[in-house]
Image (tube, rainbow, N blue to C red; front, side):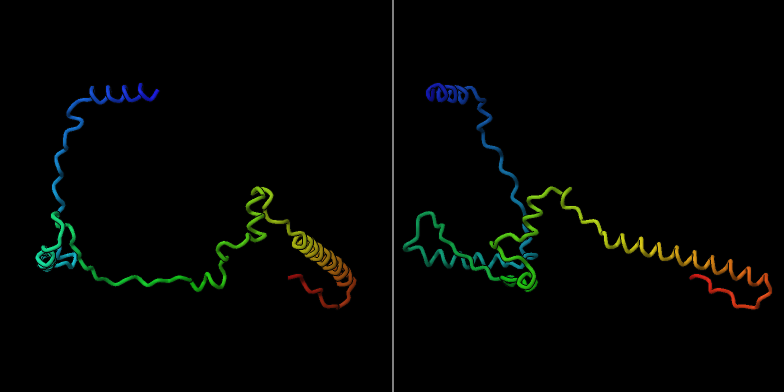
Length: 160
C-alpha cells in the first residue's frame, strides 16, 4: 500500500509543471526610516565591524556571531491587581455555589424569584387606599345631609 502511494506521489511530481517549482522573484525590500525609530545605523555598523575584527581569530567561516545590545524601558510588572486580591476568585480553587448553579441549570430555571412580599404589600396598600376612599365618600355623604339639615359643621378633609 505504501509503495502505491509513493509511486503515485512520484508520478504527480514528475507530471507537475516545471514553473511550479521556479523561484518567485524577491519582493523589493521594505524601506525603514531609521531616524524615526531612534536607531543609529552608523553606530551599529561600526560596532559590527569592530566585533568582526576582534573575532576573526576563532570565528566561524560564516561570521554569523553578531550581538546587538538593545536598551529600552521595561513595562511595569504587576503580578497581583489589588482589586483581584480583595474581591476576585482564587485561581484554581473550588467552584462556588453560584458557579455550580450557573453551570448545571438551564437559563429558564435560573430566572429570578417572584417577589410575593412585594405583591402582598402592593395589594394591601391598594386595599387601604380603597377603604380610605370609601370612608371619605361616606363622611362626605353624611356631611352633605347634615349641611342640608342646617347644621354648621366643618367639611371632611379630602384625600391626598
